[in-house]
Length: 96
Image (cartoon, rainbow, N blue to C red; front, side, top):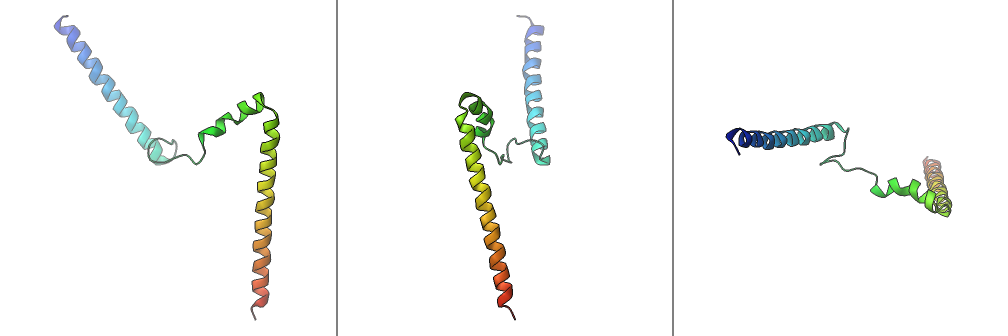
């Protein structure tokens, strides 16, 4: 190998290292702005959520289970808000 081949390989290694570092810095910058979940901020969603559509295709009855779970959650939230509203009105009635 000649000197120029060695020099070229060294430049390639340093150039690739610099490019990877710049991509890392770009990821941190995007994470800081909230445009990307990269290192410090974590996603509020789980990775399993992306497989729901695949499960619905492979196993159609699962869709009904998901629908029932969402319906129960909605009813529970309504009951909580109704209970909170009723307790607030009772507390207001007790005040002179």
